[in-house]
Length: 174
Image (cartoon, rainbow, N blue to C red; front, top):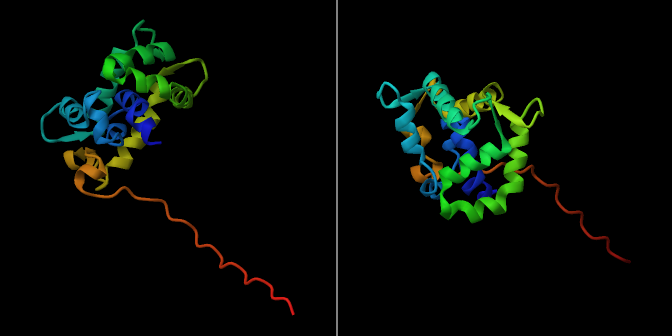
């Protein structure tokens, strides 16, 4: 999962919005615009916070960059070209290794299965990711909410495991 986040997830994040960018690890920032750069770009009124409207406007702009033929949908080939341009030559090898998983993630966003992801198909995922990063529930993302947990000195949350029943005692022979 870490490798997915280091290669394909940042490129998908560039399309999906700021909430997803926050999920990308700090090491992924070097290949693409980092979370703080994207935050500054999305913060249209420069108040140090990105509202959901600002994030969706930024998403729309990035979507327009990826939609090379301007047909209102981004195909897998358009997405790959956009990701390659964002990641640069240093990310090409990793992107090639992760392409099957990235394509699966792309198909997951393609709700109508027509081979293109539209802005309408991206919006629910972007909104969900935005809400997941809006930890204080104020309807806006702060710089601290964008920073990955490790950059804030936190450890990522691990899912709790259900307690296991104690092993039965071995039967003794008499």
